[in-house]
Image 1 (tube, rainbow, N blue to C red):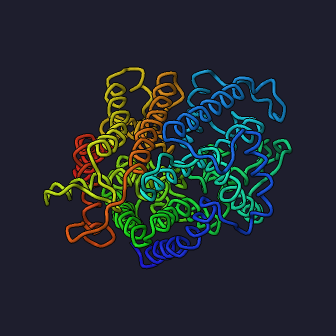
Image 2 (cartoon, rainbow, N blue to C red; image 1 turned 180 degrees about the vertical axis):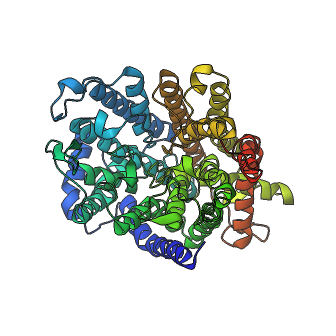
Length: 567
């Protein structure tokens, strides 16, 4: 580890903290329906969209109606994206002549993009036409991100309101998030990326002649616009198979910094939105502090492990840490930082090969996802995931003092705790059950690139990434098989919607409750004690659930490496 590396990490953290309040204030005004600088531009379009949809910004929905609207919208998006892929060969804007996508892969990709996962069992530049990339994948990048933020806002309303029967209007929240938050920011980011050298064209691929005289096809396309929303919306994936290591997706250190910042920007700002909506911004800062503690610990361990490298390599007289699979332009510090950022948020973008990380360096991305990606997390999804853990934390605090748990003046009773546990437990269900089946299924084991504990980690990482709606991969697993396409697709759907439904049920239950004034026995939830309790609950729940799996994967691999064995 170097001073320069830590300075870069701390500068990044400082930028995120500085963005929280202005972005949070703006988003609060948007979802509150207040006038903003963009209202004269998008206001008429917003009202016209409501008219077409047969609703208005004055109509509100019961939590069940909100959930049904969300599910139907995502079902429609799934079907449109699936059939765009299946009919790709017959559709326009396909200059490279891409053929129709296999049904199992089309199912996996459709499930991936509607769930904000963007797991890719294909090479984007060699598989998907411009039309599918734009009208299918990029559109879902916008609306899946907007869906996650809408759910978070609905849950916040549950805490902020008293004796109410509604939690907002899904169509209004979705529209406002897309028009006022995602779209304008992505327009600016796209222009910046084009300025930095990213392609943005509908022209055909270019054939070039190399210095050796060979012919090489250089893939181009509408890259900058997709990169803008894939990072801002924590979607991940990429136009190119090499993702953020490709110079057309990540031209230089400036674009690398912008992409890392945009991954965390909206998710971190939602903590401030929460504080503003419940009338106490200290509550939001306490949640962000909890996320920050877990994030800094993860970065420190990952950076240390990659800087230390493999002792077997050092024995050969080669030093300098573990550079295998790293992007040489960015080095170990920024590769480790990017890996922790992208798995702390549900963003599958990578600028280094996680499969090439050391055992402990690769374990941190795994742990980030297994904790439910609540360390900032995906836009919206990370925040409502964190609120599930908050309910468990205050429940534990209530048990310790023999008092009915409260949070922000709302009594936390059996229904809320049961729904929170259901949302938390659905993730290990998808991650561990599918992994257990895959490691004994010969056709599934045949897809791994390495034997021993590292091969186990490749499978565990795939299903963890799917259920956590992350989308990154170790890279050593050949996932484009019927088994992995179908089971990973199912895992992504479980990880998304089996969390959202309980979260909305909690929102509805809390909105109907009266607010109880704080008393001498009320546990304060805006100070260091609560931050420590929340971090402890997250770590304990994650450890009890996933330590056995981690022990036979990265932990065993690390111990074997110390004793001179690699996989």
